[in-house]
Length: 395
Ligand code: UTP
Image (cartoon, rainbow, N blue to C red; front, side, top):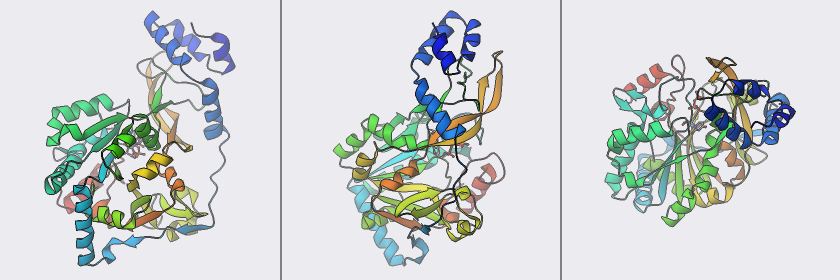
């Protein structure tokens, strides 16, 4: 039975009406879903992240993060980074983590984003292929961790199975699911998804660290002799997965976090890598003053290496939730499917940077390494990714 008093107290009694027209099993499912929720916590989150949110404070006192520029290295330096990198990979010191748990709402592709193909080759295959080539080159297997979420876990697994894991040794592929959190209407109400379940969505890519910890993946890496974790997104069509030159640079820098960046265009809406009161952060375009935004032009592209010991220590530390307002498919009072702007609560992986004591950055050529696939059309779209792949002879 739904606890009417409790639901009313939390302003969630709209479910009482819904439940009147549900079948017995649907009602039972709803009751069990509701009973598992911490409504006080959800209310606090709504108030904190949405209702009482403050206007974005424009940060001052910010400095650019120090960075090296890859194009300024000599051929000999690059060669030596590459051989240092290949040796570390051969010695099994690096594992790779692909964050592929997102919903890809903007792209609107049916299925996980990694199944999106250019010239019949999916983004998953493009990344698997690079790792397979590396394994063949160094002769040592590389553990590949792939983060999915409830929205795409099953489809991701079937896609890999159907494609025979892209000839990558499946014993070295580790799929794990990130956590989820309820989405709410703008009035703070719980939502019913199209399966008549309470809607929960992936809790943002910053869920990665806790989920790695919870699934014992960090200790498993440690036991396997891994010392560094390379992390990247699914949707950068030009990503160089475990790029040996960057790996060599990382080993030499020996920092808690080593990151790739690009030089942002004027007014480009990409997060900037900055240092604020000595702590490294990624600040969004909107969080910077118009003067700073173009002065601080070292931008984050979601390619990083974390020292495993740093992650083991930092994984349990708190990260803040951010608000995302996105159009989500859901059921209305008549159980019709509608798409409505709703509140999603997301953790961002880069908020962990503030716990790092040492941080190194290598700025790379965006034309060779960065082409995000976010939208159907326009900027960062299918068309731009296609062009960038062509320009790099990757099609
Ligand atoms: P985005 O923030 O661009 O989100 O993800 P998205 O879900 O792919 O797309 P939109 O915003 O709904 O259109 C950047 C990277 O973080 C991963 C994505 O899979 C992508 O590699 N991600 C995002 C997760 O792994 N989990 C999440 O909860 C969110």
